[in-house]
Length: 164
Image (cartoon, rainbow, N blue to C red; front, top):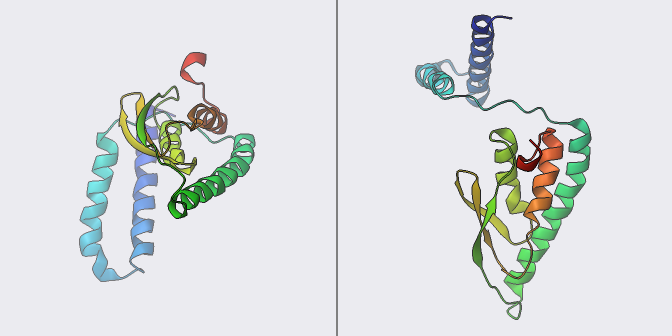
């Protein structure tokens, strides 16, 4: 497939996806297209204007390993925050820590950033290049960001920075 054919195919798929999404969101009302068509044109322009990150497919085996980890960490995170909220004796010692990312840019990195908040007492605060700032509720507790990064790398079958 030539580069031109690939670009047109990608454009047609995006156009179809945007049209379908707008139709679903508006319940197919004809009057909505007055705003919808310019909005879709702007969205397509933005999508094509900025460079695309490499596509990293999701590994089925990695997904099957990530789901139980995600569920367990979500429950642990919720219990930890609830315990801290209702227990005045549990001290808070918040801090912003920096974590050097080794995941490649694109989907793996964004997935990691969004998943950090599922860990007990953590929240993604800022991304500056390849350094993630994370707000932790207790600086004495290891947020296990490296373990999460490894899980995400397995999910996307991508190498970490030291493995490239």
